[in-house]
Length: 501
Image 1 (spheres, rainbow, N blue to C red):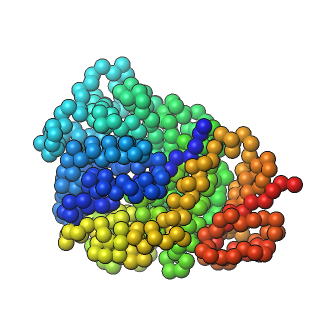
Image 2: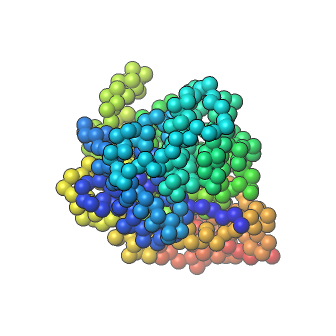
Image 3: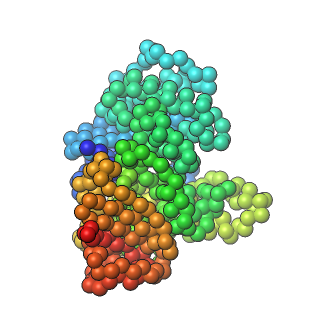
């Protein structure tokens, strides 16, 4: 039976600091495993944590060990999650494969116990080396897959693969051959593994082609992060924003042609660590924060596809409280500004956009309470600003409120866990429409009709439904639905049902 999967994307660096040195760590994830059990997610999705040493605060370079912990703690974290039926997915940056700390000799000295037993030299592959790649790069890739396999990780997500040939982001024959090669090579090393691709850049035409021709040939699943680029400037998506338009989202969904048997292999991901949170960019930060965030969660989680929830979205966390450009820790900030000014863009437009688009907004601490550093760490060292709504939207407040965004998200997962996608594909008809800025999702069964109405705007919109429709879920807390539906309030979303005649 095919079922939707719910992945939770999290970087240990920002989730919880177990040793109070100011940085989140492997041990912190292990200590908070009850939280993931509470949400009832299927797996956590980790970044390519060994890709390179990053500059995370002013000019301070922090080593892998100082940031995350040692190999023993990593192994324990993986074991703890798997013992509790929560799987592990790891991302592998193909573009920067040679920068991985796993390949560096000093890496053996950083970690205890000795990492050498987790790395294999493997020259037995039957696959020829491609012209675009050196033997050194192939050997590096094999070492990384072997490393994770020996830690009992069997789910890999390839990222940054689009531009290995050119800058057109097209699935040309060379790139296709390259990805098929890496798919087969990975399966040769770990025959139990599943392999996914993740991209912000592929359009629906390319995605449809993948699902119609290349599933189980080039990848086993696909994570679509292109949603995060909505409401951005097409030429400068990471520098300049523009107003959110529901029509873009509607067009995206209408032109998706995923075969029904593969629905669960397509993952919607609206947030990621490359660009600011869509909660602040798509929605209104000043009014109806809870209702608007519930709308967004309902939209992404009540479709037939699997989802990737980015940490903090289930709390409704917004952008960081950034007041000065130095808080962005972006050493290309002035260069970007000059380039845009040269192309006749207003500087004020760029500076205001960066408050929302800068990726630092998506790299906030997870907020556990309204105390110092949001309960993330007891350390006096703090390398991030806090979200602008951390005093109200934190785990402690929302866990104890049955009507919170957190518990709304948990309930959505619970509802979806019981849906058999094979049954839906064979016995139901599903239609998605956009009328007057209201998304209408119709699900027609043998005995019932279900309709989901989602108002992703900050205005009331007329929508009449007769009394035969019964409301079974709403994003508006404690609202009574005793009469015919006449309109939807700002950010009001409903799930309704009626019996077929």
